[in-house]
Image (tube, rainbow, N blue to C red):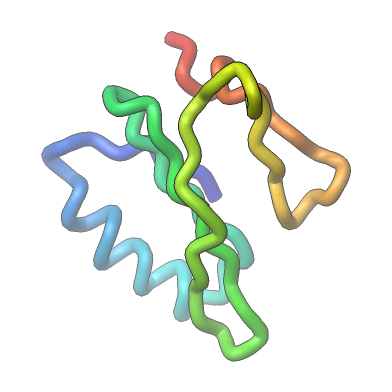
Length: 83
């Protein structure tokens, strides 16, 4: 699940939704900060708890981000942040 976060809903997105998605078994949880051009990716581990996979931002060395639940899928970060 990918979520673009706004400053007005940041607390809800990073706490309430995080807990809800984790307890519901959502395998992969992305939080996208469009203004900061930053992505947080969490994966559900075998104990049903999210682990932070990483924090990502677009750069020339790593222009794509891997979708962990679909091994063959990578997205261009510039596409994620485009209007």
